[in-house]
Length: 332
Image (cartoon, rainbow, N blue to C red; front, top):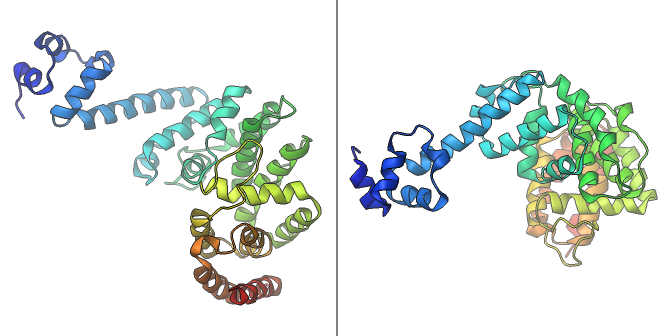
């Protein structure tokens, strides 16, 4: 715009001496105060956009360097082409750095636990992805190995809510990529930790392998173990932010599953047959007990199950979908 120092000072309300001190300083953005920066962003075109881009680039450059020193190369083209907000992708890269460094402490557990949720999980999925052009790392093999090594070391307390979430998230991501139940992830941990970690492994393996026998074993386990069923019911609504993430793994008695319904409908359309079997045989019946209206999407759910079930080759899946469809049609 061709503004000079006096113009900037006049428009922003800053003293000319302040503007003069920053004018020729290449590091001005690191030196300007928060209040002065707000004034500049609100009055001078381009400052807000530059500030955002500078902050992201500075953090990215640091993460690229640090990850490189640990043997992990960042695919910058994949990062820049991703539809996921870059801030979330940078958070995922930082999680990867902590994992590959083996930082087995409460801060790491707490940081990884923040990825419980649809949007941050999408970023973490990009970190672990092996798909060229989609994965944030050119070769995430070392990340897989480090995750398996780190997971049991995060379990240093008998009960820690963040460590439970972190264990679930790590095991889910690894099993989703490998498609197998890693033996090293099967370490013994008590109570809810065992149940929630098992869910993470099973969901990841189902998504990757499409193993209907695994889905059936998981269903039987939930039928036999109340704590598994309780955690299963808690997982979707908190992941989709229909319910508050609570350290006691409880949900309010009255809960509308609007966001959960949207996600389940997406998964019915996009995921493999074994995962659809899990939804129809295990999760959706639990969800209907909590919210019989299924977030106001019963009609769409009925139609989606009817159409998807008809396309499944396995008779068990077809029959399970048909049974649930008949039940849904009988609801008032």
